[in-house]
Image (cartoon, rainbow, N blue to C red):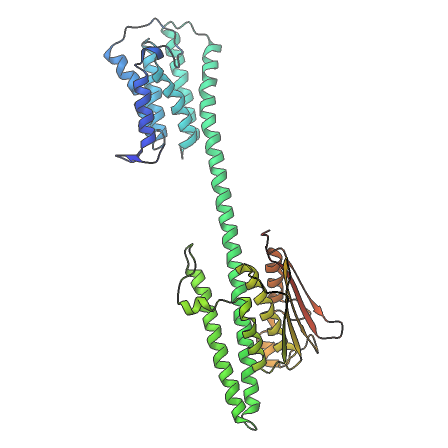
Length: 400
């Protein structure tokens, strides 16, 4: 009911509630229904009594904005109304609502407010007793318990609301951490692969300048092309970081270069241009997959080729994509040694990317990514030497 607001920021629903309760207090069929404790001789209706009736209802308009003030106004009006012996009206129900609102919406000084309310009720009981009320101590205690239940219900709602907000914050923080980890893995895969290829190509160019200058020119052109591809993918990731809930925006050419299975051939071609003999095979009928599945498979091939360039440069490498009815299988196998880096500069500069035997950061991150999609990734020495990376990813991934 709080879809709008009245002047002063008062919720529209609370204003309507206060007005309805005030009007209901003067409906004849509702006379005698409400909260009552004094049982003093009934006094005839008067303007003062009508004012006290309204004072028990109208303050409910601010029951959520200023719950303590609402309780003080309603409680004070109820106490005077009872002490003067006016007839019970439906407006006295406002006392229960004010107590509930104080329990549910009072943000600060809650214990002090509870003590003040209890002290006010004790003072009312003493006044009523001296005015000749027939009520006994058990009667006052029973009515106090009813009032306490109203306040405790409000407190329970507040606790539940606070716990739910905390759960939402925790879930949001976990989602943010997961997204940061995903982006970190993306940046790691992009930078490691492209920089490794550039270093290998640059090293090769140094040896080709003398005997084959034309091949050196080709190698340097490959370095330039690899650098541009790295910048393109980094721009795409930055576009994702800058997105605010919608799809990443930016240069259409950049978004079009987002890594997918259709670009695995580009990875293979770049590895070949860097001097790595790579055989690329597709098996089965190609079918569309989700973005997460295609990106994970792309990164598996990218990381495996990066390791091949680093640690088994020049060794035959085989890339296999197998499209199944329920899953996608990726296998990258490299002949030759599985550990020692091909050149000290490459291995020393990029040793953290996930090497063969150690299952470094690159492969560890990929393993976690594939597992989150419900798949499995295995890596290790091949039966005839070399190193192999195998991943099986369900076509319809489940998030765990």
